[in-house]
Structures are given as structure tokens and as C-alpha cells.
Length: 290
Length: 141
Image (cartoon, rainbow over all chains, first blue to last red; front, top):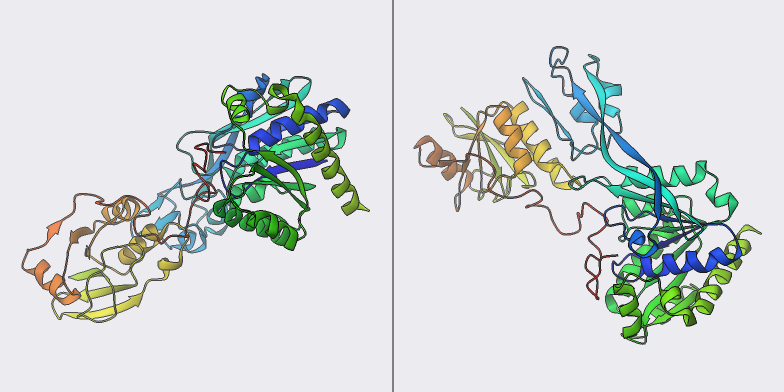
């Protein structure tokens, strides 16, 4: 089973939830923790994993042979990302706009385009506290997080992590391509929010993506509970979204977090809550499957 | 000489657009006859690379000079590669700007004068991080 912890809004507590959920689930079976927030992966700060392997993620980019190019403009015409400028006497490729789709190469009538691969990031695998661990890291200056996240998901699938037990994926924030990629093999999208107008606004976007567009089963965690206003609770009731855990806003939680301790290890009284979250998640996925 | 001008409208008396890649109209003006051909800029709808596309279209249309309020880095690179000199024009109409160019009263740009995504409207976010970066508690994720 794969639970993807996502949020819409940043700073709601995805890492807090993902790390503690993985630690609690470890008691009842094999668990893997995957940090797919490749622009700022920080599960490792809490889990101190031992990294055993590191694999570069290569991204294709077109290279134009100036001798063969006839400057017909077909490559720029088929490029959906405006990454190529076909000029009367030269052709320019903008690699930071290129998605590596290969359309230009396939469509070039002169056969003037080939692909070159360059590393845009890497994935690391290892283990921590009896769990399998993986994280993706996007190189500074690279714009395309999705290929790194895709490589992480593929690796977890190929290694059979989901079949062997539970995989907890810590997704990037937002509601665009990187999150959609992180949610691609999710059995459950666990959306972490906070009871503020910002939290609600971005939660709605995340629900639209995870449930309405991708058809995932969605459950909610409300962090910083007791602050803000009741609008998130009301929205969850209206939309029939189960709230599986409420984490209060408490200084000691923030202190444990800021000192790099997973919540359930710093404050064990939160273990039952995360146990209930796991059971609730399992029941939702089982209910969906039957 | 053919001059491409980023324009806010489709007449010679429309003000020059302050942005290049995502300006609403392009005017291709013959500086001898002072006649302009106006093309609606398809790149305004692009999620990214509007400057690349607009600059390429200008080059393929045979422009030898360009006039715009500002110019971003990608468009600048494309126009430079195509051998097109870009001039800046502030509060002028398309007609006034081309006349000023002919009178050598416009300043040529040595490179881009605004950063990328300068003319990109809100909502055309590139990454997934924009929605919530630096959320309430000062953390990022």
C-alpha cells in the first residue's frame, strides 16, 4: 500500500506526518519512507538514514547538428514548451524550458536532432530505524522536479516496496506537475492542512487534483488544530472527507520538530493518534478495493 | 527596413507595449512607407517560453530591428542570435517609436533589461512550490 502525504499549501506539516506515520507503521510490518519533496527533502534530518546507493537522474535534451539543419522550423513548431527558437540561420535550444519529450527529434525531417543526457538530480536509497528509505534530490538551478520524482516512484514499484508493506511518500507542496507525479501510484492521498483561510484555499486545490482529477482516495490531517477558524472542518464535512488526525498547535511539538526529532519519538503520547491514522487509512483503502 | 514593435493595440497610434514576449500585438512596420502589419501575439497564452516564441516569430518575419518597452533574457538571446538590434521606447505610439528610430533618437539595448517571467501574469506559475512557500510557521514543507 502506498500513502502519499501531500498538502497544497506548504508548511502545513507533511514531513511531520510522514515521518511519524512511518515510524508507527513500522511496529506492524515492513515500511518504506520515500521523500519525494525533491526541491527541499528534509525527512533525512529527522530519520538520519544510512545511504547505501546513489543514482543520478538523467534528462534528455535536444542537440541540433548545424550542418544538417535546414532551418525549416518544424522543431520549434512541435515544441509544446517553446524551448526551441528556429531562426533563419541558426537554431537555439533553451534547456531550462525543455521537458525532454523528444518531439523535436522525432519530427525533424532532416534528422538533425539527437538527444544528449545530463544529470538533473539523483535518488538515494538506504535504510533508517529498520525501514527502507529513499529520497530524491534536485540539483540547484534545475527547474524540472518531475523526472526525479518519477524515478523515485518507479524505483519503489520495481523493488516491490508497496507489495511488501507500506510505503509512505512525503510529497512536494503545491498542486502542479510534481505533486501529480508523486500521487501517480497512491492508494491514498493524505492531505495535511491547517485551519486557516490559506490552508483551506490550498486544500481545495489539492482535493481537486487528488480526488477530482486523479481519482485518488483522499483523507485529511488537520495540523495546528485549535487555531484559525472552523472553515476547514466544515469543508471536510460538506465534501465527506474523513479527518483521520488532528494535531494541536503546541510549543513542545514545534520544539521537538526544530530539534530534529520525529513527533512520536519526542512525544510518545501522540503514538495512539498516529496508530488510529494508520488504521483509518488502511480501512479507507480496503473499503475502496472491495 | 522592417521593424518589429511590441504593441498594446493594432494601429500605428497604439502605445508601444512595455513587455515583449507577452505583448498583445506585434507590429511589423516598413520604416520607408510607415505602413504596419499587425499580428496578434499567440505567445500571450504560453505557459512558458513566450519570449523565445515571440522573438523567433519576429526573426522569421524578417525584422531587422525591434522596439519594445522592455526585454527579457530569452527573447534577448534569440534576437541577438538573429542579428536583430533592440531599441527601447517609453511613452510613444508605434508610429512615434519608428519615427524616433529613424531619427536615431532611440537607445539600443545591450542585453535584457528585465528578468525572466517579468511580463508573465499571476497564475502562470512555473513550479509547484508557489502555492504555499514559506507557509504560516516559516517552514517550507
